[in-house]
Image 1: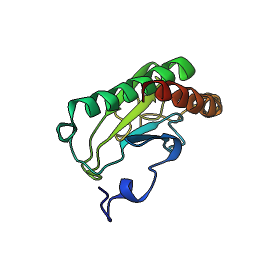
Image 2: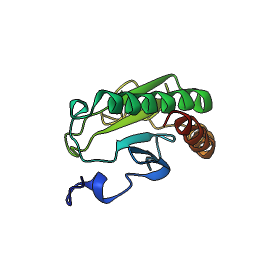
Image 3: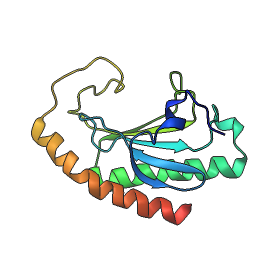
Length: 144
């Protein structure tokens, strides 16, 4: 089911890395957070409990595969996982690699900025995003 005024029903939700009949994985265009990924359930559902158990398992295995790829490629200090949906009530997970020198650390990426990120570090992370996308596509294809 698609909902006409839902942003994640109308658009891919970022640069498409992988899509199948259940879900899609996208890279989000956030210049201060290279490798920021969304895992988006294709059908318009609001909550995890609207999915069957096998669908929940598939979705979470995908989120974990994305996290593993981020750890391998970006070597972050921490990974943030969030499923909020307050503004966009379409089931999706944010998988965000975090670094001690990022714009908001240790606050959430939606919080108050804490510093100006180092452009050299950001550039290196941005260069790794294509490799990250390839690793995510390969990893998720094996489980889906």
